Image (spheres, helix red, strand yellow):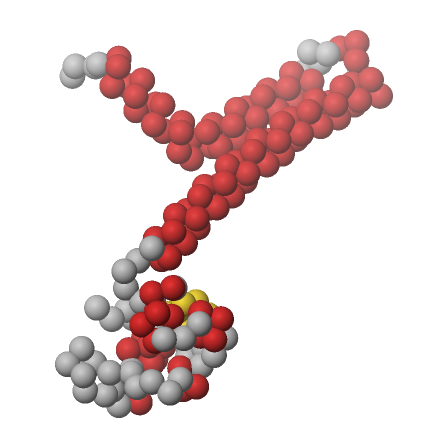
Length: 166
């Protein structure tokens, strides 16, 4: 077996960039806390038995807990920043699409309409959002121009089955 140090380093770095950091931090914290407790119980800190030893143990525990909370908070902030970036990307993608896009809930209430959808329907975006598809004077038709039957509307079928349509 040929071991390439560069490949191993890259693999460890990739692992640490993912979920490995959290598991590594928790594992090391557990190891340190367990080691400290074992040493304390084995009279390693012989002169610090009683109240002084308890205070040291409480201080060490508090520091470890603080560091874990600090790490957890930084991970939450990073994931929130990534989520915000993803939402901004999706928003730009929807807004600049050449296709009209309407987002509806199960009852047909429109929760989102991009500018192209408003342009195609000849309505203001503010008139679309919050309305129901039944409130529109326009007819919903298939690509060939024939009208959909009420139960065959794509979003009704998706709401009924929970499966996407392509």
